[in-house]
Length: 145
Image (cartoon, rainbow, N blue to C red; front, side, top):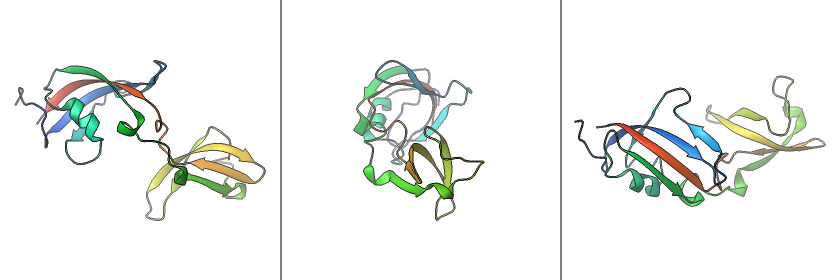
């Protein structure tokens, strides 16, 4: 299956690098040499991202830029919460710029970024850190099945 081409239901293993519009690095699977795994068509990535991968095969490399709505979406104001400062501990202090894991009602954990601390009010942003950003992706396809 070395010549398999990425199509609608392919499983794809690939490396990626993400750069912000200013050229700075945002994320890379190469840092820990752990490629990403993706099931095409499962709605885990945007249709625009899938379209960029479609037709590629193992060994192929491609660089493309996606608008925010085709990458991580636009920040959603409903994902901003205000929490009382007393809810934080010495282990996880309310300090602007800190990312803290919050336990959701279903038991899962979601990271939130402390945006601001004013008096006893702490502003937590649960939007993806790359939401609202135009991003350039460089991908290298490792395996297609």
